[in-house]
Length: 121
Image 1 (cartoon, rainbow, N blue to C red):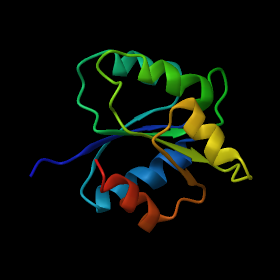
Image 2 (cartoon, rainbow, N blue to C red):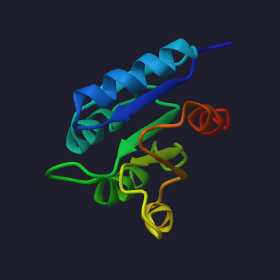
Image 3 (tube, rainbow, N blue to C red):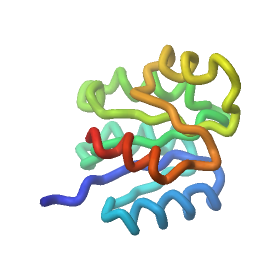
């Protein structure tokens, strides 16, 4: 069985570190980008990415702007994108899904919930 590869997009190195440690412990391969633009550049290549975890609140380009751009890349239209947000307010999930996210997870990340989401990939 090949290891599934998850791309983490987050401007906070601590979040990347925590998610990467969690995912590695669960046998996922991880890559990380600290900005949406860096992620878009990477996703334009043929790099294998089975799923994307994207922080919704980032400087320059936030998740709401980045998700549709990722979905518009010809080789990424079917890649599952899970939005990660600290802003777990009423309506946030709908807003994330409207932007094109596959699903949504609130911070602090519930590992069981994250594994449930990633079990679909």
